[in-house]
Length: 276
Image (cartoon, rainbow, N blue to C red):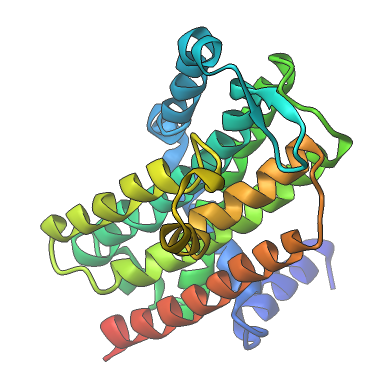
C-alpha cells in the first residue's frame, strides 16, 4: 500500500468512525471552516477587542487620577487603573465569546443554513455545537491574551499568577460562548437580540468591574455575587493582583458548570431544530 493511500484511508476512517464523547474530534472541521471564512473578514474579527481597550485607556488618562487608591483583593491599596484592568480583560473575553456565539450562529442557523449542510456530512449536532463554541472560545482567548500583553506593557501585571489569567479567561469564554449559543437557539428574530444587550450591559457595569463589591448594600451585594461576569472578574483580578485564595476554585467551578450546561443545551437544541 502506498503512503498517499494510507493517509487517505486514515482520513476516511476518522470520518466514518463514531465520534467520542461530545463529538470533539469532528468539531475541529467546523473550526477550520470558520477560520477559512474569516480570512477576508479579519477586521471584523478583531473589532470587538477595542471597546474594553478604549475603556482602559480612558481610565488611565483621566479617571484614575481622580479616583486615587482603592483596595485590591488582598486589601493592599492599588491604583484605580490596576483595579479596573483585570475586569476589562474579563469583559474582553466575554465580548469575544458572545459575539460569535450569538449573531454569527443565528445567521448561519436561520438564513445561511450552514448547519443544514454541515449535518449532511458525518458531523453531528454535538460536533456543530462544540465546533462553534470552540471557535468563539478562540476569539475570546485571543482577545484576553492580547489584553494581558497590553496590561503588561502598561505595568498593570502585579503577580506571576497573572500567567494563569489567560486560562481563566479561556474558561470564562467557554462558559459565555456555550450559554450564548444555547440562548441563540431560542431566538426567533433579530429583535430578540435586544435581550442580549439588555443582559450584557448591566452585567458589564455592575459586576464589580469599576468599583469594589463592598460599595453595594447587603442584599444587592449577594445578587452581584451570582452574576457570571462577577465570577470571572473576581478570578482574573485575584490572579493578576496576587490575591490568590481558595474562593477562586469556586469561581472556576461556577464557570465550568456554566460551560457544561450551555454546551449540553446547545447540542440538544441544534439537534431538535435541524433534525426534527
